[in-house]
Image 1 (spheres, rainbow, N blue to C red):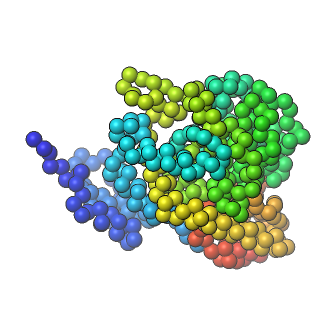
Image 2 (image 1 turned 180 degrees about the horizontal axis):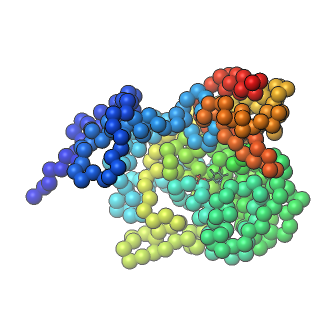
Image 3 (image 1 turned 180 degrees about the vertical axis):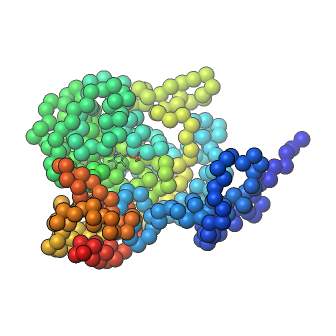
Length: 401
Ligand SMILES: *Cc1c(COP(=O)(O)O)cnc(C)c1O
């Protein structure tokens, strides 16, 4: 006997969900305190939730949104997210995800040449991509420690702690670049270089690749610059790394959770991070077990926009960061840390009232960061729809008082 269950058959109601994206109603009721005993039904639930989920969300595509590394997403990814949820494929099991696995392979075939890598897999973010790469380094090359600059992302500290590897923190310049003169012998180490540091967007000297037993490049933020012929050169040398992490949910404009961990020698790396099991037809590679078809969204984005379309958006946001920095530098009331290398602009008012200015600016326009124990304002170019003139005018007004 087959079951008729309307919760699995939307019968045209998905269109209502989509129209709620466009017209979000006012809040009518509070969220119930208790888990309801009997369900509200789908449409009533969507109407209840949309003022919260959609109404209260930060608008990452707003003209003033320039604070964080989270981009707005091209609408092709919304459509694929719906398809993916409908199908719920699991890349752990080839039988449930025949096309999703091919899609991931195709995306890697297309993107890996930009990084000189030869294999890898997707995972939910660069925190996991970094952990996976350092795990592969430890268990395939027996690295004894992790060496990274003080400006490296906290996920490097986490990975070292979880893997019980000692970590040596190398000083960085004020702009956040690893100070090569402070780097000792790394022949027994996994050296982590960052391409696009979180606080200031700096790029560590990639000439250091090749000195350590394993070099991992954390290109979570800066990696996609490789797709741009204007910015490609900034990551010159990355192709010599042993592994590279890129967050696709940053400059590749993917919905979370989407990142790539790539290896120069995937056979070697995978031998260290693969597990078989009675119920698995192929080994489980990496940290995650079940994982979704994030690759299909990335594949669709690359198909819809092309390499040039992605590069054009990346160039656009980098150019906006440049304009912002130029204009702030020309203002006598503002101190600019440095011209942005990867779209992160760091500055502060000369009267040092960083927090006061931050409070005056629209939320979403700036975040703050700490450099050498001092607070700075930081803006991050992830939104191709930003209005940089509006942003500059707003800052200048806030700083002038
Ligand atoms: C964002 C970021 C990470 C962490 O990536 P998630 O995708 O947030 O897990 C690691 N390193 C750098 C340099 C980053 O910018």
